[in-house]
Structure formats: structure tokens, C-alpha cells
Length: 375
Image 1 (cartoon, rainbow, N blue to C red):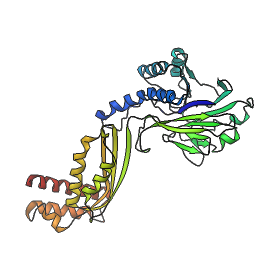
Image 2: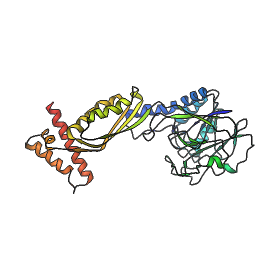
Image 3: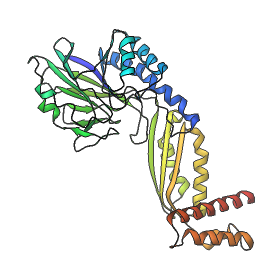
Image 4: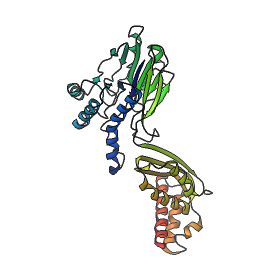
């Protein structure tokens, strides 16, 4: 029996430039802390090996503090052997990076820089497929079926990239055959690149990232605890939570007949109590009358401080405006004329979608301003 942890896509050093600056610091630190949580998962699972299927680093030029602290964290995990596969973000083309890693790596950290079998434990052979450059343009696992190993050995494949007919996270290469585990007689194929957990058959898995980094894959990150009972046995695979932050995206479909604020409360309540470690994006779609839309925007603004990051995307939400709604801006005079003009522009068929959106946003802002002054 052989037990190990399968993880990938730590992307250490990711800056999260698409998020507000005040949000980034804890996200960056959580990625580094994921190393310790992976080590804890390994100890809890009774495993002494961790297989990292690519993209340990976010770029080929991480700062010295990023890679040195990563090696130090791995070194502090006593009794664990770490096996690192270069991915498309930190490919073998980063010769300076991997040269420094080789020089400073402790005895329990191993860089897999060649497509050749490595015996990582008695009768357990690892078949790695390191990525030579950002876009390799070929199937890097094609050598595995031709690699002979003793019949009583467990064979584990380790690769990074997209699977044919499924897709790739960002490598641009969807070229690993979905039946590679069978054709290469692998007891388990550990893949990286896709940031969520994904399974193909009984033996091929994407572990996903141990710390989520985008809304595309909801929930906290995880690693996979794998048990191989012997050559040919179906692997036992269990996901273990390792992520500190919970990323969620919730749809909010609305109609004028609904209580929009009450509808918003449903995904907010579903978020639970641990909101400080949650990033939530709500996508509102459908139609609302102007007063209801403004009430919804105020409710979303009030909820925002409870979360580490909160996005309310109402770009898909249209506004139904009646004469009574315009009365809320002004019954007559300059404000009423301005409101009617903006309303006409927001619905003008001859206007571009961008111009209609600008007019609609201006009308909502005017309504909010007047109502705020009235209160």
C-alpha cells in the first residue's frame, strides 16, 4: 500500500492585480500557508510523499523571498518528501529559477526535470512529464506507454496540461489523451493545470489548487489524498480541504414582481458566518423598477463590509422606469426634464448599447441623489 498527496497550481507569488489592493495581502499569504496545510493533510492521511503537478510558482521569475520561503516551509515538514514538476507558468525554460532551487533545495525536496522514471519508494515508480516551455505544443505524456517497469511496481504519472475534449485552464494546450492512464498502464495519473477537482475514469484526476484564486471554481481549495493498494488496484481518492478562503459566485435572477432586497438576502445568508474569509460575487440579471433597483444597490452596499471581498455585478440587470418612478426625481422643472431625457436615451433604439448603459446609469445616479437629499 502506498499513500500520497496529490496537489498542484499553488502559484506562489501571484499578485492578484485584478482585485483591490487592500484585498491582496491576505490572499498572497494564504497561498504560502497552503504548503503547511498540505503537509498537515499528508500527516493526517499517513502519507510521506507529496506530488506537485506543476505551477508551484506563478511566474518563471518569482522573487527570492517567494522561492526561498517555499523551500523552507517544505523543509520544516519533517518526514515528507516533496516532488516538484515544472508547469507552464514555471517551465523548465526558467533555468535560473530551477538552478537556484536545485542549489538550495533541502534533502526532502526533489525537482523532476526530465521525462524519465524515478523510484520514489520501494516498488513505486513515478513517471513525470515536466513542461519544457510555456506552450509545449505536444503531448508530454506520450513517452509513458513506452516506459517499461517491473510488473510488481506501482506506476504513477505526473503531468501538467489540458485533456483532449475537456479543456485547459490557461496553458492553451488540450492535448493529453483522456485514456492515458490506461494506455500507459498507470495506477494513477496526477494532473495539474485545471484549478478545480476533476476526474476522468477511475485513475485520472486534477487535484485543483489548494488555495482558490478565482471565482471560476467555487468553494475553498483542496488537495487529494490517494491510497494505492497495489499494482492494478483502483485508487482510493479523497479530497481534503486546504483552502483558507472560500470563493463563491451566485446568480440572482430578478423580476419587478419580486422583493429584490429579500432575494438578495438568500445568497447572503447562504454564505454562512465565516464571511471574513469569503470572496463573494453576485451577478444580478433580469428587470427591476427604478426604486427597487436602487434599494437593491443600497442593500448590496450595506452587505459589502462583512466579506473579505464582495462584488455586486448588475451589468446584466435592466431597469424598468415608469412615469411614477420619474416623479420620484421631480414632478416638473429642470430635474424632471433631465430625468426624461436620460430615460429616453436609455431606451433609444438608435443609440449604441454603451450609450444606453451610460444614460441608464446616469438616471439611477440622479434618482439616488434626489432620494438621498429628500431623506
